[in-house]
Structure formats: C-alpha cells, structure tokens
Image (cartoon, rainbow, N blue to C red; front, top):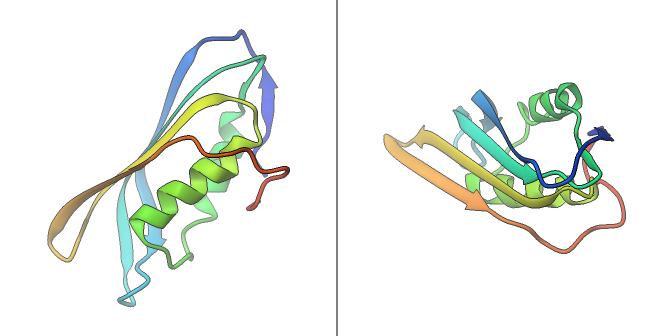
Length: 113
C-alpha cells in the first residue's frame, strides 16, 4: 500500500522507475520501459519506499501502457498530493511508445495495494 509522510506544501516532485516491468495484454511477453511519476506536495508527500513496492507489484499485471498510466494516477489520488502525472516510455513491437495520464476525480480509497 502506498503511504504518505508529512511535507511542506507546494514542492514539485518527480520519481523515475528506470526499469519498469509489466506484462503485455496481447502477447505473452514482458513490456519494460521507464515510468515517471510527478506530483506536487500538499501537507503530505508520497513515501518513496512504499511507492517502489507498489510499482514492483505491477510486474505480473497484463495491462496496456495507456490503462497503466490512468490506473496509477487513480491509485495515487487518495494520497492527497496534487497535479499527479504518470508517463510511461518503452518499446513494444519494435516501436517506442510514450503514454501519459493526468489527474482524475479522487476515489474514496486506494484501488490497488
């Protein structure tokens, strides 16, 4: 589960998972690329060890790059940080792809641990 820690408001943060893995939903193969998550702190920020564990939990998930970005944004919304963006850049089928998602309505609780 993603946790938060106290923070000073208004700090722009960016975390990069240089080798992010998940399964291709079409072919039985691993997709890998770089995942960049950006946010602005409020009275809290995202605790990075919990974020890293959360990102590792995607390794066996069969999901498109686009759905992945949107789901991570949605999962981070409950943390109360603002301006959340997620960008995935990777190679699949010999093509370099970049998918990006932005803020969405706040869910009442996290959807993925």
